[in-house]
Length: 331
Ligand SMILES: [Zn+2]
Image 1 (cartoon, rainbow, N blue to C red):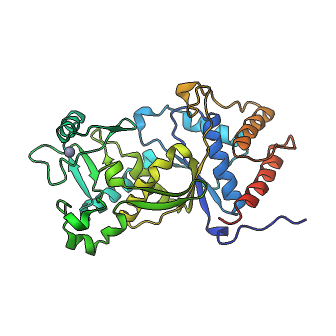
Image 2: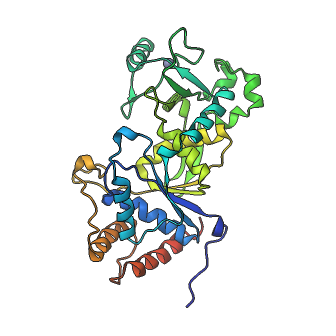
Image 3: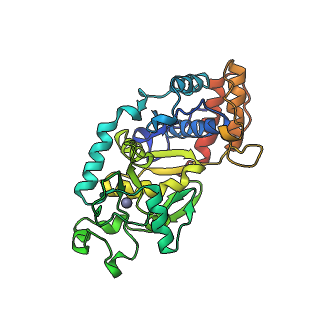
C-alpha cells in the first residue's frame, strides 16, 4: 500500500510552528503541543517551523533555548527552517506599532497599575481577569499631561455604531478603515474546540502592545511573527486558546491573514491543574532514545493516538502521522 498524499487544500502551502518560551526546559506538557504541531504539519505535507519566544527577556533562562532544541531533536522533531528568536525582531514589532499608531489604533498610556485600580474602583468594577485588570480606558482620549509609559491597542466596542463612543476615532474614520471587522465580538472556529467567540473590548479591554518597561507584549509579537513566518496553521496548548480573539483583532488591524487554530488538550499535574514548572513538571528525559520514545508515547496518548509498536522513534512518528492524517483529513 502506498502512503497517502498530502491532505486536500493544504500541501505545500501549509506552514505550522512550535513556539516555546525559554523559561525552562520542555516538560511533558510542552511536548504535547510540540508533537501535535509537528504531526499536523507532516500530515498536511507542510513545513514545521520553530520560534523561540524570548520577548519577555527577564523571564528567560540563558542557554535554555539550546536545551529545548536538543530535546526536540532527541524526540525526532527537527524544524524545516532556521529557528527565529523574538529577541532579535524588535524592528518588526516597532514597525507594526507604528502602523497601528498611524491608523489611530494604538495610543500611549500613562497609567500605573495603581492608577488603573483606582479608576476601576471609581467605576465600581475592579474584577481582575486571570490576574489582569481590564483597562478602564483612561488614556484613550489623551494623556492629560501624564508622560506616556506604555502603548495600548484601541479595541472597538461592539456597540460603537449606536453610541459613537470611539474617542479620537470617529465613525466616519471607522467606516473608511473597515473598523467593523475588528469590532467585538469576534467569532472563529477552533479545529478541536469548535465555534468560539469573544468580545475583546469587554473581556480584555485595550491590551498593552509595548510595556512600560520597554518590552514588547506577547500578543503583538506572536501576531507579527506568525505573519512573518507565513504561518497558516497554529497548533498549541488549550491554555493559549483564550489569546486567540486578541490575536485575530490585531491581525485584522494590521491587515494580516488569520491562520487556522487547533488547541490541544493539556497535560494535567497531580493537582489537576495544567502541568507546569510550578506544579512539579520535570524536564523531559531525552537522555536515551528509549527514554525519549517513552516521553513521546505519553504525549501521543494524550492526543488519543495509538500506542507505538516499534522501538524506533522515526517509525513511531510515521505511524502517528498516518493516524493524525486520518483523523484530521477534512481540515
Ligand atoms: Zn492609561
